[in-house]
Length: 403
Image (cartoon, rainbow, N blue to C red; front, side, top):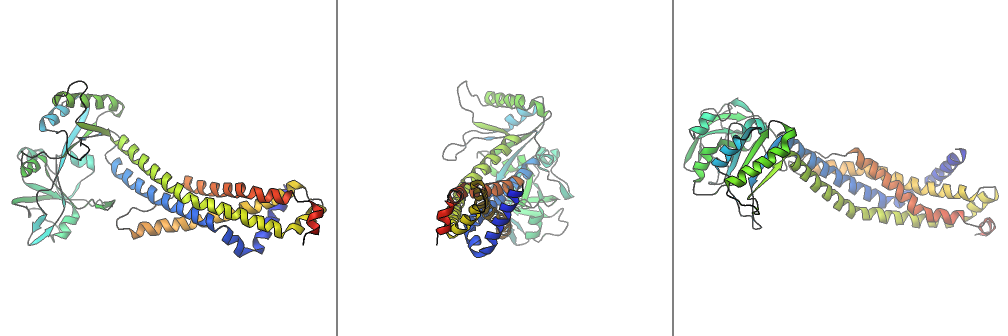
């Protein structure tokens, strides 16, 4: 233990004697670690934001939607008859369709116009999406059955159209259609540049009527399963029901897709992991360059301190003592670079996230900190071995003669 502490003291003294050179030596490590931490913090922040949005649906939700071909065209269709058949499946606690309207440019009120996302939904959608009204009410079954032209709006829609603070009873114009406001939703913020407060919800049958029944809309069903342990069995049952209802024969491909919320989250996690690995591999080149820089400078340092090594060996220092001292010096330089890079990367991640409009806050997970510091130490060990071995292998007599 004493020998290790003495070697550590000698290594720190050597680093302190050449502060600028030590800093420049670790610059490659600093840049590499800072880049990795910045990338990881941004990707993790993004993943966490998306995950929180999907977790609102719960782990017992199924997302059923039409498939598209390679050109983005809809292959299948989800109809009211499909909805009725799926509602009848034992174990499906609730199900709501949703479809987006793109018929007209925007909503109009008192001479002002604003573009918002207009979505046709059923009453069950409010609970599934955690979309609750702050003022007024949400869509009811009576609204849907009567195809009423009513609307539940997000707070941004109210603000952009200069509606009254309590706009219940006001009318919005959407093309030739007039929509009566019956509720204003609680604010939900933003995700990935998408303003979640810029939505207008209308009854699903009303939305189909506005689009025209001759047109094939893009429809998605969101279903809630009563027992999450039966998720796999109910997914298979939903698939069988839709195939039978669509007249698909054995061997025919599905014209729909079914995903659970857990599967969606797993897919998101896989994408973010791939992004992290790709960017991590790219910026990891900086760590390689930094390691080579450490090795080169340490080799120069060994040459400069040849007489010092000779004196140490003449006084009884062993080959292992010299090896440990120079190896510790390389590891400390690399580890200091890792710590500085960690701080810079954290600051970079926060700064970039704040500069990008509506981007979620950056997150630095503990595993990324451990990885950065561990990798820095490993670089110091790997690239410090050759200079340390060279120093340890010096002949004491030749070293004392060295000028």
